[in-house]
Image (cartoon, rainbow, N blue to C red):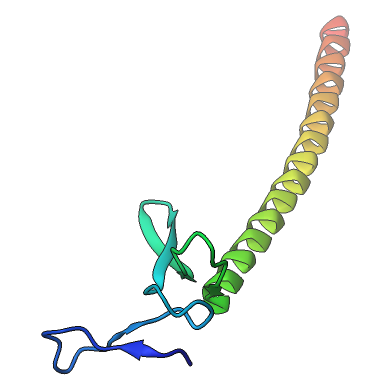
Length: 109
């Protein structure tokens, strides 16, 4: 993977990774907010002259799948709304027919 540098006072802890491209800086964690929580996205080199970055593909794929599920839900909501409108229009037509029939039956009473 990358070279590691053991820090003073850490006996059994995992050492931090050093940037394999420039070799000068420790890699920093990149993250973003997901709702109320914080998710790790990857690691990057803080050196302005270096553009090294590692992305966590597993978490990115999970976020993409969540986005796809969100669009699927949006499409389903649109379809259900269209069905609702059609059914509502049919009910209105039936109600008008019932009212006409009731008015016609009142004439014969």
